[in-house]
Length: 210
Length: 103
Image (cartoon, rainbow over all chains, first blue to last red):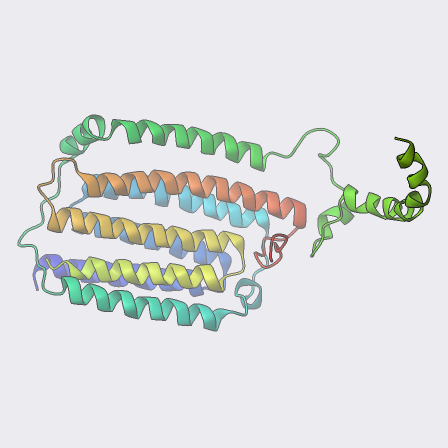
């Protein structure tokens, strides 16, 4: 066991523990904070693997932006805090599925890569990464910028409160949810159904003339 | 450094994410679990790149990880916007309540 392995073991234990607490925590905000710890630990894993540029990107994008975005999301939706409200009744199913998946995948990985060891880690420098992006990966890079622009516009359009008559919704329409939300089509369906029974009586006369 | 450590860590994180997606009811927590799964895949990509194929000219593993980070950021933005919309229309972020398209 080399020094790299020891450091990796420490960082991996931190990351895995924080990930477990993320999905089992009873408090929403604690879950989001443990997610931030997990993401920072993954940045540490990248550092151990000598991917320093990726580690910095991970810190900036995930710990800096995405975790804060999740905290804002939790605060804006004012979700109830409590265990029963957080976890559904299918916790046993989730445990079975994820446990079986972990056993199968780790068995396969140990069987395939059990003896593989790298003598030393060599990560590409930031210069090589830049050259690769703008030489080999230009088209995906530009497509990614288009995707980010589309996601930006789409998120604004989705989250914007509509101005105009549909902007202020009545209280009963906001609270009333369930199997069939009240729509105008549903409200108009009843009078149509009533007249539909009377219409065919007079219809054959008119229809026969045409 | 052995390759099996990062791969097992990535497997563990992915399975934790699967557990979170199935067990959680809050839509924001489901999104958090999806982020865990995406990050697990990133660890895999970087480990394969730097430990097994360090001499590859186009640095495919790390660049795929970078692209996944950017796509995940876009996914979080759109997903949270959908969750806000759902909260505004139904006053709840419970994924069990959104069963309009359930068969």
